Image 1 (cartoon, rainbow, N blue to C red):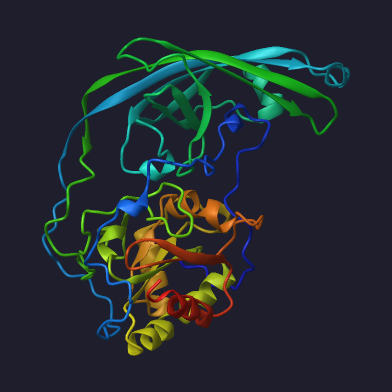
Image 2 (cartoon, rainbow, N blue to C red):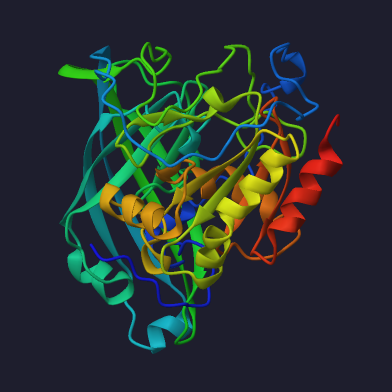
Length: 407
């Protein structure tokens, strides 16, 4: 893939599903507040909040052969299956425009995954699978488009909440509740409804009802995400996770941010919390975004200056797949081209929806739309200290770090 370097104005954030589709009742759950995630219990004596440390030179990035072997999948995983029927009830205005009450039905079969907990922090089980429309395509297509099989993401919590989205690397939103947590193999009823307006005039009510069930899937194993890496990183990144952080799923100022594991330029899985003890700028960028390119082009100078002042500062770029495909995970080739073109020596990671799911609620709280680059500052104790959408100068970031020293 050739890196697109034409300077382009950054567009708004990830596209949401069209509001008329039945999946859109389950939108981004960015407003979710995990009241149990109290970061005040963090006791990390190793995180020096002064931010002033010995100078660390900016070296050329290289990937060493460290003999890393990914951990084996040992945890039993579950399957999730279900079906639902949607009934569309149009009002008189819509019917006068030719719409007729109708229904359609889909089935779903999926398998559990556990490596993106930030996409549904309230889910006890998250599953990715295929949804198949087996009835009612003629009802669905005039409003929503293709009725072809598609990938969907379903999840549920043990306290009786059901989550769903059709967006890869998109946050699942709460769709409905059910009477009791599902026991293995027992179908559990789910139902929900919403009202929509039509651009051609009129409105309709969408009512859905179905069932889902889960069971242990023979031969489907998951990796234990809590297992710590026992060999160095290929690029020499630090491994300073103290094991004491207590995160908040959708952090605001002062909250400990969730961990992630994302692949770097060396193809190595990298954990955020291993950078504990450093000032971290997380930069959510797209390769075809002009301001993102401007930010990257001055990154080396910024790091040299800040480290020369005695601050241990790290820039971690979370890269999407471009402005028109911002939530899709990019290739390692793209990460390497970005790294080489801009002379970057810090991590450039293939994002999997982390930046938007975790930081968009904070960055857009004032009403500003999400765009690129979007960046946040994280303190040495892994707490969120600030951030912004857009880029004007690295000096703004430097001032934020200086203002936060000791805070």
